[in-house]
Length: 184
Length: 361
Image (cartoon, rainbow over all chains, first blue to last red; front, side):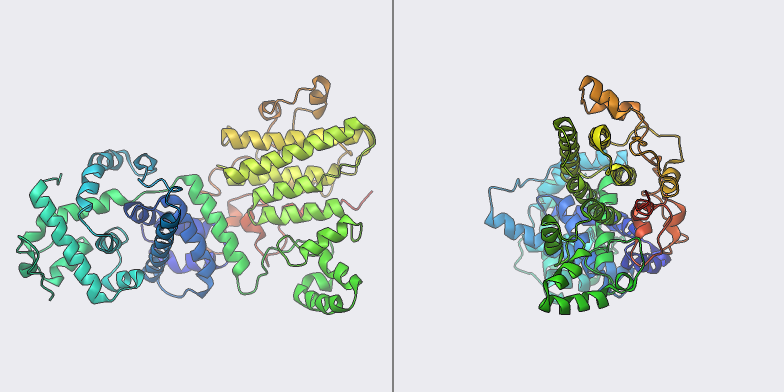
């Protein structure tokens, strides 16, 4: 839930190092950040999300902007962290348990969790038709709610390339849905 | 508009515009019926993807982030400076003092000693400070370690504060029973530090209060001698174990005594008897009597060292309506990490404030 008109105050207090302000920021963004990281198969999404926020804290004094810009910046960092963990996983293939533990979900309401469990498998199966790049872009657009430009910024590609990736990804998904009828 | 005519078996490329895709991804119902099914799928992804972390992780990450933000503030140093009893110019103007210290250092050994003595953990000079103390120069060993532990505690680094407290325990004593008690205290502190490092406290605020009380107990009683020294060691060990127990069991039951923080604040004015083990109901003597050092003991029988677990303070504490720096003051009791942000005036009862009074006989 966005912080809205409080954002400016919260940001100011966060720069001053107030615990409550960081709680407000983390509470607001941790859900989608962890969701994004989990969907992109980060080995330990909660850890990567925490690292992301510590990096945000290190850079907070240089940040100027509104809530949307902040959100976008957080996801830029989360995405870079994700890339780092992928590289690390490639270097140390045996140290990383790859499949995400789906039982690790916390919070949320009962209804969502139940639905979650039901559809997770189907969802994942469908999403497997995407290439990594397509999946990155679609997850940033859908889960992180970034704009086309913000997504391009996060993945370090041109807007045109992002457009192409999301279009191809959606085509692949629809083809899969048409073939398998896996939608709920 | 890009086209992917080579894509097999779909009209998608020719009938779906970029605007349609933007609508779809933005979550609004797409005008293009070609996308209805895909829109449901996108909504599903959005609905099931958010994964909230646990409450304790939120609090923990927030505390760490706040600490980083404080320490990287353009005007702040790398770590919170230890607050001293006296306010003389070289303490209130540390940059000037450090500059002078640096100049002195290049010329004299005394300069090194002087400059390094005020160094906090993490400072460049801190290693020198420790080394000098080890050979007996600038000694203030226990008090200095405690001040540093309090500074670490204020910045939310609970396990480092405990490890520091362990360093503050001076093992020199008359007989072996005293040494054993002191060693026991040291070991219990290290164990508590390791436990908390491995798994941060579920209730950071309460943990903060407990550790603060522990540091205060060491501060009040470390000059004990003889039998008292043994009791002192056992008292510290009991408090440390209680902290470990809390750590294992999660937050304890609600404690209805709201006077905890107040008591902590009182101490400066009224120095208790040399060794009274004020914070734990179960006297360390009982542990000594039967030699039973079961960790559960003190935790069950005694009230917590200080502070009622004000659940609301860290979690939902900050009222959204009044998010100014000073707002948290109304929520958490004095001595909470946010209260001791650098630059703020010394809050009553904050850990480092309890230092005065120790000089008095």
